[in-house]
Image (cartoon, rainbow, N blue to C red; front, side):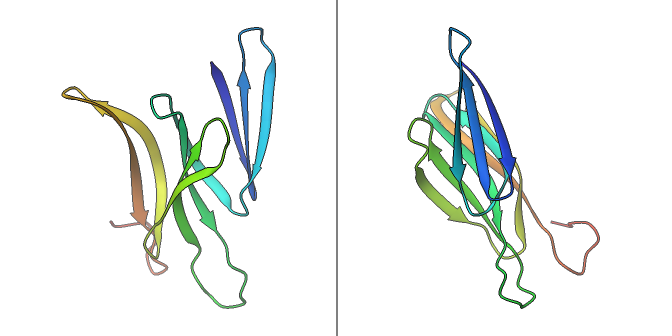
Length: 120
């Protein structure tokens, strides 16, 4: 099955193309910005990195998450809030030669306000 995922402000759109070339599209309202997404066939899930902006009038940093969605119902199965100033920069599904399990690996960086480029 071939898939297409499009992240727009506040929502995620996922489309699949079935065997007869019919396109199925579903938009999932998130209320936050999806930044990176990955599909894992073994667990039948999508994992994505996202950021939520709070408009409280104060200079609060945005909050970043790693979220896990069921690939059939698109319900959030699990959610992990990253540390303050920690951003999800990359995400992939992988497995290891001596292990039958599939894992999601997330690359992050701490984006501190006083730094031009992340240093850790």
